[in-house]
Image 1 (spheres, helix red, strand yellow):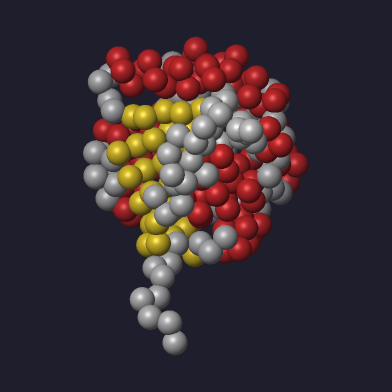
Image 2: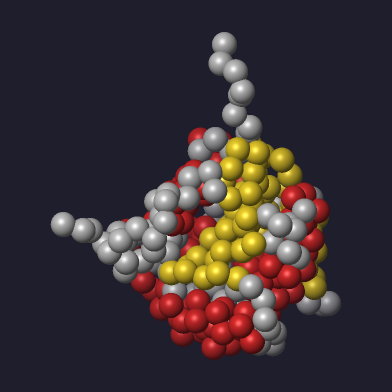
Length: 257
């Protein structure tokens, strides 16, 4: 008997519904997704500086409507974007086609994709993706799933030895609650209320521990800052609210002692 592989245990239906409902506005730079559009040039330049994206095999985990995936493809990367929300994936596909940008999209979680499956398919689409990608990005996604450790482990499995995995998420402390939830969602209303759940924020030490346990090593880190007066983002050294980590999978030793 053939089994259909799914990962519903690591997907929050309420989160998927929220992003599905907002999907039509994903590429509207004045919509709820304005922060992603404004963050994107900074994270793109940082990633490209570290790995030189051209001709790299790249996987964007939790790609949503494709803002980062499409930008990396424009830099010459061979990009696959995966997500579990149907409507954002449709928007991503339509936008890439309209812009004549080559990006492959599939409905899948990181855990499922690592095994070569896509959601709803009864047969494996390809060989397991272990050690397949030069670069994996997982940006603004870990705080939306019940088990971020499972996603991190899958990313570590799929990246090649010597390859890079990039994470970005939100720190968990009183300051991040005040800024990322109270200020951003309730006072300035830059994001819809309920976009983030404080309990799912992840401290840098926690994310590093999960990544290290999966065999990844830290190479670079930045905090993400926002100026409400200029409405601009920037990367800096303070990681008290939003932050980004660049992890690398060590090269395997050629000889065993």
